[in-house]
Length: 290
Length: 113
Ligand SMILES: Nc1nc2c(ncn2[C@@H]2O[C@H](COP(=O)(O)OP(=O)(O)OP(=O)(O)O)[C@@H](O)[C@H]2O)c(=O)[nH]1
Ligand SMILES: [Mg+2]
Ligand SMILES: [Zn+2]
Ligand SMILES: [Zn+2]
Ligand SMILES: [Zn+2]
Image (tube, rainbow over all chains, first blue to last red; front, top):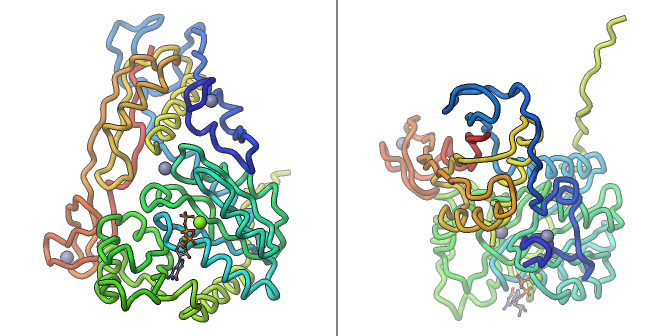
């Protein structure tokens, strides 16, 4: 944990350089207590007062804000940027070792003549995956989350500012290997792609439903190992459908290349969707009165 | 460790509210947590106490309100109670319900001074 304040998120490092996310810097993460202020008339709706009204009376404030509000707001900004620049962004999610980096390396090899690409790598420690990506010649940023178990929209925002992102290109985000909480954090991606390898068992959609619920595509990886493991492909798909009816599924082998063509076609289609999309004007309409 | 960053978010939102609405002490925090939300309430309590140590919410009581899960069944067109995303419709047994409630976590109210 951070020695200054005991927080975990300060440990996020981008290529070994400590990342002080600006939302935190601005909003006093360091738990300084707010000095007492002269109490004014409360602006909030005061539902009930437990003491007689007056200075420093206890009061109840209705807040009604989602805890992920800040992440979602940043994700929206990221998404606006990507869509304005026609960048297809794929967030790759799976438990550790399902083959995300292997798939990325082989996908990049197939596509690098056709599309400008970049990669954001998320891991708790090391830049081993970034090195594997860099060997392909594609720009990559490694984020180390320290004890953090997921990427969030602010980390992605910081990383994307350090990457050469080309209009009409493709950005891959390899999330921290974890089938649980990365599901809750919108990064502003175009699609969430979930990998499940056949050595993990077909019951994972039932055990980790959130991940399969938010997925836009399920890749069943390591199909070359099917003869050696007891994995019922149909059953896995049925379980995934319970959580997410109609979820597109592609089975492939990232190492041997079987099924890769279908995956590349899927990317192609998604890329056309982004390129063809009319960018909605999000700026508020201004009414000129006189 | 996921709950730690959620606890940090809660504190940050409390501090924003403190500036906007002029209070300097928080006595109680009511959190509404859906049964389907991706959070472990026990762990959130633990980290809430840690991250609020030196803040205006120090020693604040954390009240967690459970919110039941609810889904819409397209097959029989009914709302049904669910306790997990892979539950079947109580009415007709179909799977693949559309979640309509109980998947969020929010700060609902604060008792402040
Ligand atoms: N047989 C087989 N092995 C594979 C396949 N894809 C990946 N692997 C192996 O699985 C292991 C883990 O692969 P990675 O690509 O590092 O997995 P990852 O999801 O990036 O792992 P983390 O980043 O640590 O979460 C490596 O030994 C790969 O060679 C596949 O299709 N078939
Ligand atoms: Mg990897
Ligand atoms: Zn810190
Ligand atoms: Zn997490
Ligand atoms: Zn039904």
